[in-house]
Length: 397
Image (cartoon, rainbow, N blue to C red):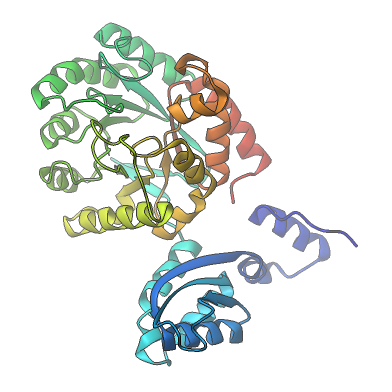
């Protein structure tokens, strides 16, 4: 007798094959093997009690306020602990329960569906890219004078093109070009100035590099000009809230768009950021951004989310995001993470920005293990190598 380490579906299927289990039963065993924790808020006394008893009847459990049974509190949050299979059964059983818990059914059903069949395929023109197949790398190309790590290095179009060619040769799956610094304390850059920096580089890169190009901007004017010039996707640190016109631009072109969480604005975001519920607030913010995009006509399958490492977060916040990244699975869309050379790495390791490679690699591998589909980095070659090994080991579920 021994314990098994089942860290992925492949691990489980290998063991099931070894004992001769019917392959048709493998999805059932996988659904039973994975326990998920679901946070629910603001349940009534009756709702919390019914949810707990129904969860237990399904083979799971539900933690609620200890004073709920006696009725000394009127509301309670809850932590539901179930397997994927138990979650499906729970959804069915709650349908016949009173309104106080039956109202939970649509959202629980959506959550169940997203966890079992997450949307990972994005469309780039005629190409379909499955971001769940392996971990992808997005190379950062800042054509700015003041970015926190490489400001000024690639402001010259020739230097920028050369760096893009190098990153593509090192294995970058995407090139993300930004003409406006979003470092802490940065001021907005007018669209005209962004375009003057961006367009010569974009044109040159599109001629020389096969990798898809993302434009990092919050401006509808900049995004539209870049997309007309051949950019393949948009990376918006404001999650389509900075410039309302950007919603219509992304919808019209039908390109993928990265929606990032940021607390505040670059100029003020690091002034003592505070959260009551860090992951709850990030997830809620991104869910609202996805809804905003859908209402504007953007296909959900064309949106990706980014928790915004370093954007209105303390060192502790950034470490918690990496540790709890799997919680973004509830959104059912690909996850992008950008830990590269960030200040939290420098704070933990006590090193300047040009000595944060090892920390960046560690953060990227951990993010991939916890569900990141795309890693946005400065140092492409070493990160690609590290992620290739991590994918070969099978760290992704």
